Length: 254
Image 1 (cartoon, rainbow, N blue to C red):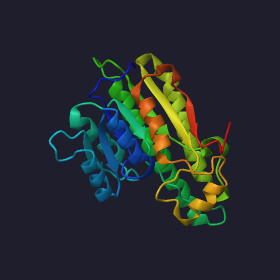
Image 2: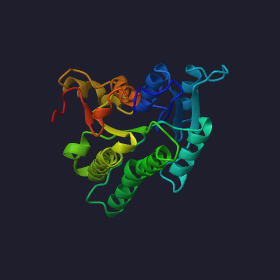
Image 3: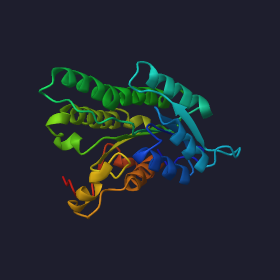
Image 4: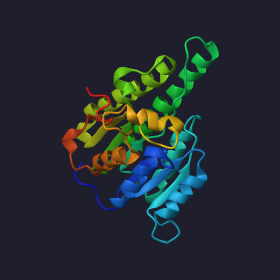
């Protein structure tokens, strides 16, 4: 896929906070029309849309709500995203959850696996499926781009209480590579970005103590991850397809 046309449309899941919010800003800055998905942050999502020009008559941001943990919601989100401007050119699967699945609690283990797999793997997989089908429609030229936000846990696994999270992110990473290999001839590109600790509003009071242990003396800002998303979404380096980009501030180096 060559450098995308100015009217490219990017769907960002989990776009109202953290990495997603920074990505929406970066993609909008680069000229994209952005579908900003959220689950339960309507006020934050609308505030971001307003910041980027909603209500001016020339807005390039469209807010959609969907609960990706619920059956049928990924498909509805995709259908409504495409309906906005007739196409979606880039899919950024950023929405995710970090839920415990401790071995010594039968109920939490079962629910933790079910919820982590549903939101962190099955929902983005369904969106990937719909995106690939859209980009392979007869008469459509130019392919498309998938950017999946995984985690360093996809490489190394996670701690004892979050085994399901690491497994789900590892599955999403494998899916990304499979898409890149299987659909390269269709000019469909696929990447995954594997952040470590990221300084979002979910970090809490331990952020300063954690930052002191980091090689750079700080936790990765979400804007660093967003800049990588924006570059990959540009299509300017198509032969990078299939790559995993680590954004960890050298805290985890492969």
